[in-house]
Length: 186
Image (cartoon, rainbow, N blue to C red; front, side, top):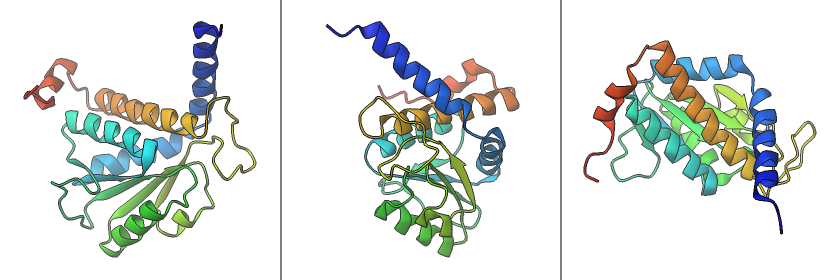
């Protein structure tokens, strides 16, 4: 039988090692972009999209106007807005098309990924690297014992929660007051 606690510790160690290698200056720049944007949009596919949806929801809890590309209530993007692209490889077709389109509307684009020299570089104003193993198997990637790109999606989600807590501390937000933004039709 496989020991749950042993596997759990392995995953936590991978996450710690990965998040410790994310450049704090890049994260601070992303935080500044979020704070300055009128609206924040998110685009990704698959499990990355699920992590981005959770980040968008958390930012909404902080009073940020956040939208996931493709949702029915998505407004128009403008030059006052930010598009956050989640793509480990930076080569996924749909996020590339959306980033290119966002640039045509003069929006700021931030790519969170593992590959700094991807096709997404042509459309990104800023890059935050999560240095994990991708489907491209590039050098200097943190290898994972987990299947496929699980470590990227987990790290992305935790990066989003870290950004949220940084905002709370930066703005001295009272945690109890956040419940006013929580869904109440539950």
